[in-house]
Length: 160
Image 1 (cartoon, rainbow, N blue to C red):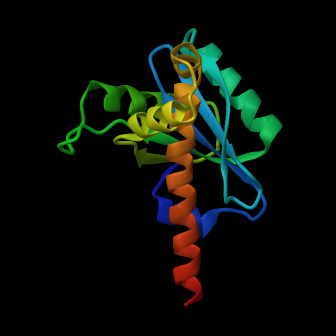
Image 2: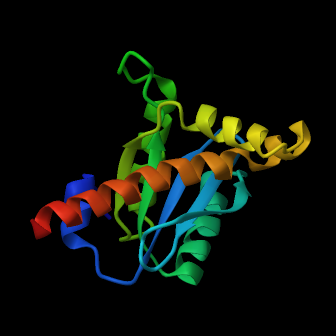
């Protein structure tokens, strides 16, 4: 398993395969999956965290079922650009996943993705209880959609 930049991923991705977006929390892993054309991110059910081995198996099970070519995982960088304990935990999760899979990971700056997801859910008049259930997967969708938009931009630039 490799940790790639979004540009490296764009150069190595096979066509017609989905990408998964992940929002790693302490209690859940928010999950989103792209369509095969890699235009749209769709939220999936969250994975309730138990311990790393169980979490990894659940994630790899989804990856096999959805034919995932890469993971884009949110890197919770502080607003001032520094990395704190949550970034370290995310990097450790990715390193540990490297021992279990060859699927590449892209670390994606996720600043404000949860805030944006919450705003959308509020605008959709989703109740507070349902927002709590959906926020992690909605944040994963924002993370993934940002990466998909960047991949599309890179593809358009290479055609010019």
